[in-house]
Figure 1 (spheres, rainbow, N blue to C red):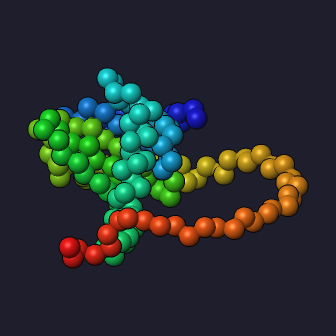
Figure 2: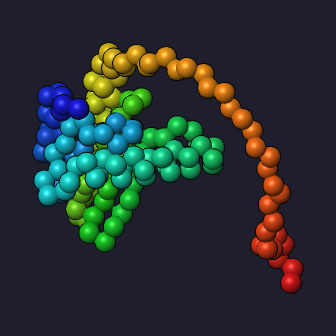
Length: 157
């Protein structure tokens, strides 16, 4: 997927507005890079990890009744990784040093995520190639044998 100039410009402006921001990546929710400004970090791997973390965060928010995913913040020994929703099909992931103002990071990350979401959501849907017609095949069933297990199902000894 080619990086869109508007999104790349937004990432660069974001890096200039937030001191201690070291990288910015826009990716699809399934882990494909849309645009990146991440010197020293492999963007495809970062996008894939973002998609994995996003899947867990979405499920956690849903399971706890907190509503739609908005953002995720991870603090490591040397800094932060923050991910923000960017429309319906994209996310913005930012890397920042430990000295960053987390409030500023959130403020600017949310704004940029909204701008990127507008750009991504305004694109026409990708053309999907027509699927070849499937010929139905006959299925046969085999008898199942009962499973036996030695695992305990209670905590009693």
